Image (cartoon, rainbow, N blue to C red; front, top):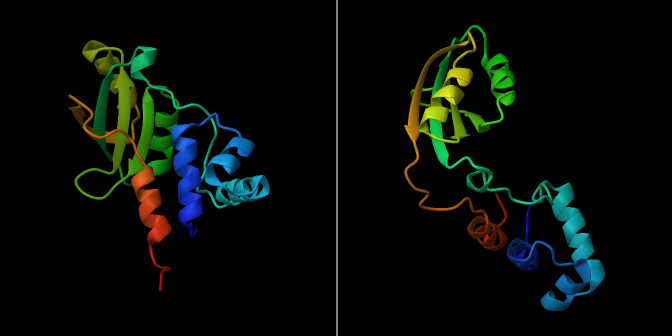
Amino acid sequence: MRIDALDARLLALLAAEPRIGVLEASRRLAVARGTVQARLDRLERGGVVQGWGPDVDPEALGYPVTAFVTLEIRQRGGHDPVSDHLALIPEVLEAHTVTGPGDLWCRVVARSNADLQRVLDLVVAHPGIERSATMISLARQIEHRVLPLVTVAASAPPPT
């Protein structure tokens, strides 16, 4: 979906102040309330805006350990059964099918390094998983972000 400079400004405002109302957003952006609402509706329909819930920090919930797990799976069984298994583990925050030496990449959290072993035991308990490799995150260098991409997308020429 194409976005323009106004969309980018609106998304930046919402990222900075997620509880701002449509009326206040329209005042700050110097556009009509209806314009802001129409833009929000279009961004949501287009899948650019995927939710309005709070961002939750696992560390603040008592899960300060983050690890990345690469899984090699049995090719006959496919990815879906393993993904269904991973979805049942609350500490698995995301999983991606990837290229390279592994088949699936997961981001997991745990309460401690010892608790990470419990989480990893749950992860590899599926018979479709042949091998795993785990890397513990020591520090987050860049927080999850999308706004720099929004800025670039708003100024990018249309695809050819």
